[in-house]
Length: 353
Image 1 (cartoon, helix red, strand yellow):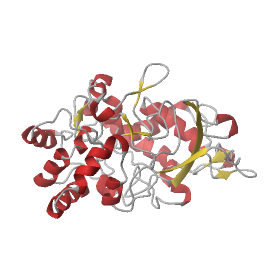
Image 2 (tube, rainbow, N blue to C red):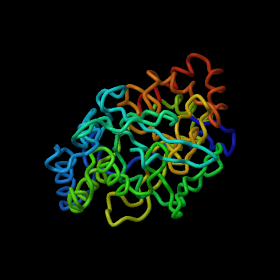
Image 3 (tube, rainbow, N blue to C red):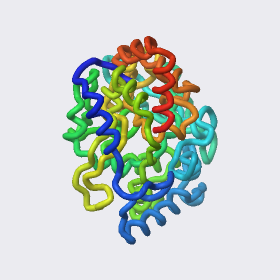
């Protein structure tokens, strides 16, 4: 959580935003498609889910280096498209490595990086260079990713400077919004890269563009988690100590050819910007993000997680909060001054997201 005492919304406006931050339509169960999809879009969702669950082997494109044999092998809890089942350790936790020298990021692509795969179809995966900076990443849930893909750049740029946040402006000028370091600008690029990095499957040589697009549409059409009724006092505390400065309660999508994605309020609880979180959390650079910089993690669906932070090191929400530093330090300081009943209200609020 990031803190900074700039541009405070009133509590009334904050609660109004929370109340309106829902995708329209009847509540969707976790793992359901977005409400309001057409029959053709629903058909693509189901066909894409089959591709997402497809198990590959060496005879059908897997490798030569890989972490998993299917997308669903890691995105499995509480349903297909969710987080990893055993988020700490095992194949659900990736190993990343890079070097940051002279303010430049070397992603070690010639040595097998930045994601160092744990398996090979033949022999052993390449070793991580001894002088590399190493970081671990747990599997993120994909719920609501199509809505994130549809948020206009201008909506994201509104938050630049608040609590020190900066846009992940990629070399081609687009904004990164996907990935722990905001390395990808679109859901399609994020997904294509995952097939390549996680399974060693290349498009179009080993997976047809049509099947890739179906898998993308499965992710695009996954509904965000429906929110339980929030305790108002916890929302008040969240706002008052500055958490909402980075974990923006909602954003609005822009126009889309998919009506179910267009002009929706999404309870994201992220500004999708990079923030420096201090040396204790710093691990490696990626793209334009420095080792201590991370894209603000969306908190929607937080109730389905059992470990927290980018590498699962925090086993409780309290631990995750107090391990923030850097631009988040004012919020941590404010959290540590809360009365016990205020802490309890805040944690109940977060556990209902």
